[in-house]
Length: 600
Picture 1 (tube, rainbow, N blue to C red):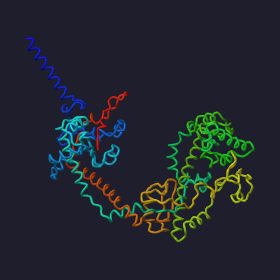
Picture 2 (cartoon, one colour):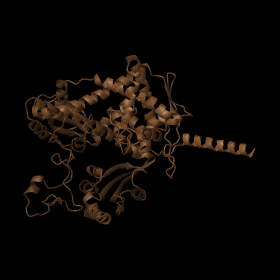
Picture 3 (cartoon, rainbow, N blue to C red):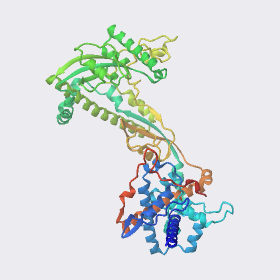
Picture 4 (spheres, rainbow, N blue to C red):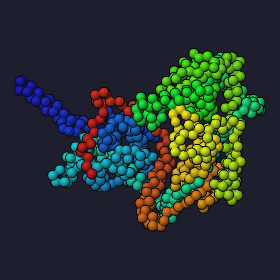
């Protein structure tokens, strides 16, 4: 009895050992040939989770950044690749494309294994995964000593990377190789003629240079639009419906109380900030203190703001309109709402510098509504008028240039007859020619040195037609090709280049103006260049190959789109497999991929 017990016990031990060896071979991990689910289901076919995991591991085997793989959605990309592989295999049956056992053995014997990506992601995602467009990974299946194929090494690589048995892996790779042959078949039908390639080469390598003039709405709103109360009221009376609609959306900004205010701002300038935070603030403080001294000498707040403030409201004499709570920074707002009408504040320090504020009026209820409606009318009126004036100016200069004048002469003639609105060029200051005539570095009456530098807090020259930063001038673009953007603020960034390449010779003009974000532009072709035959001879092979590859990729994407709409429109993914799991804080949960065993 004891003898039988010993024999029976030994048999159990041996059986357990056999199971352990088969299921957990050294350095291979368990072979996942059971518990398979459908990662993708399409027209009754099940694409298994085992193949899904094998594909994901092959795709990821050159990447050690799991977070990057998760961010690109590798699991969904893997599933979509399997779906497209199924489509290609189905179509291969129709076309009679297959792979023999000998062909498959030869491929695997070299260590070349295939994996699938969606056609529209082969280039971009393939590049990110260090995977060429042929979608081949190389496994090291050679004996380290003999450098010849080693079946044990081959099987170890398969189990280690894909967790598949050799038989399952062979069947998996047969499908992948058929899909690869289908991709090659689709790409091989693409042809690129030399004439076609040269035309595209010439189009992309040709350049154009433009002369252009901007007609900026800001120039017209600051200097040309008549902003008198009479003009604004006339517009408001003629556009009552539009004004009423706008006021309904804005009245909460004014009621029940608002304060009419002006502001002078001294911001820390970039060159001042380079000296350090304290030095930057000290420089800004010195400038605004100079401005305050001018106020104390009797200059009006509006004039000082117009010439010394860094705030966008400077052109309006620092006018902020009728302000309610919530529109200004907290330090300025707190000061504003504790002041009385007519008062000027002390220096108020802000995050960006210093400000001085004046309360001109405290308006409530009906008075606040009256001011609010007038400000709404003014904003609408100025926007409409500046748009109209900019468009008319651009068309006038375009017509003059089309009539035979140079662009420079056409613009000069327009500017000569342009007059600013009454009061637009406010505040006294030396004329440019007076400044240029002074010698010895003296400071002119406007506080400007002859070297062009302005004394801290001193009056700047007021904006005029001659010195406004957005005044119309003839500019020249840099050379650009057909996909360039020669005018950065064009409303349609592609329009200037498209028009330029339709113009035949230097000096030609289009039939219409170009819309900008802040106005309009007149453009004229200044120069055109085309690539030489020598350049084409040098780049022909590279350019033709690149163009062919791009067209082949487009052909493959289009082919897959048609297959999806015909034989594979009913597809279902296992969402639990597609979900990108987040690893634990200690790094567990991330798959261990054998990246060190791959060979080329």
